[in-house]
Length: 227
Image (spheres, rainbow, N blue to C red):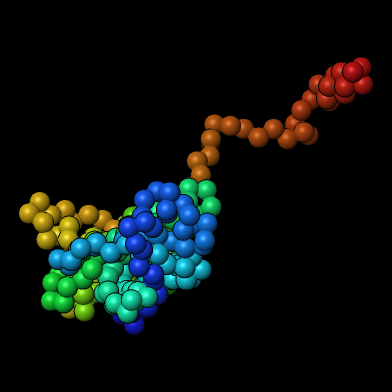
């Protein structure tokens, strides 16, 4: 599944607006400093309004789609986000790195993996536990073929079943980076584990109050009254 490009407005930063001190000043003005690099061009320093950045980050697809950044100079950059620094305590964005894309040149991107049909799976209905081992996968494709996410249908999984990277249905032109390497590792991405069974100590005997001799019960009552 693909979606329309995200559109972001930005302001070019001059040399005086770069550096740690300048970045702190920008953040106090509710601006997020960022950099655009790659594509055979010089890096471009920009700033983005904090509220616009926060709104875009609400969408999962923002991290796996082509973004169009338009600067106040009228320049347009087709990019993908490569790094995002957040405040360690409050979580708001502090800096972003964007990489330019080149038409016709393949890119490496991490895209989310969605698991569909877990409630319908026979293993789930039998009390099994669906254990997902990945949340995203690195793929290689042309920018025009970049999917929003990859979907794995687990609706037919029985207890003991598992899916590997090679079991993912890929859109046309998309390959999984790990499987394309010389030392490819087709790792497990999801499995259906048997239900957890609580062990019971069969040697332990339950003692009913009626089975305790009356004299013993009386002694305990006397001890309690003496306290």
